[in-house]
Length: 123
Image (cartoon, rainbow, N blue to C red; front, side):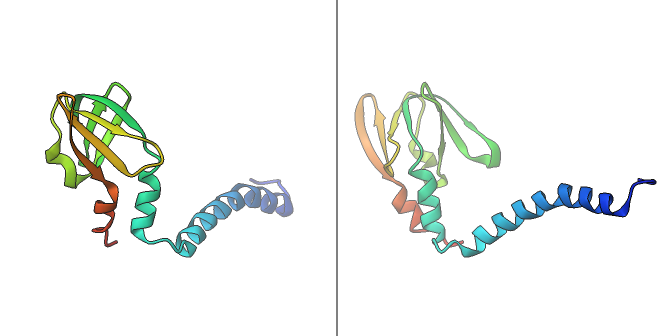
C-alpha cells in the first residue's frame, strides 16, 4: 500500500479489524459472565426443540449423534436414549417443554425427560 497516507492506512485497518475484535470480545465476555450452570444452558436449548411424527429412518449425523428422521424433521437423540428407538416408532416433542413422548404401534411407551439428562452434565 505504497502512496497511501499513514492516517488512511490506520483508518482502513481499524475499520477492518475493529468489528471482528468487538464481535469476539462480546462472545468471550458473554461466555465468562453467564452465571447459568451447564445443565441450565443445555435445557435452554432443548426447550426450544419441537418434533413430531413417525421415525422413517435413523442414522449417525455429525458428531456421531443418532438422528431420527420424521415427517416433521430431524431429531437428535441424546446418547442416553439411543437404544430406546426403532424404525416406525413415533415421537412427540412440543416446543416449550422438556418431555419427549415415545410411542410404538400407537401406544405410549414412555415419557423421556431432558431434566434427567441434565442432572448428569458435569462440564
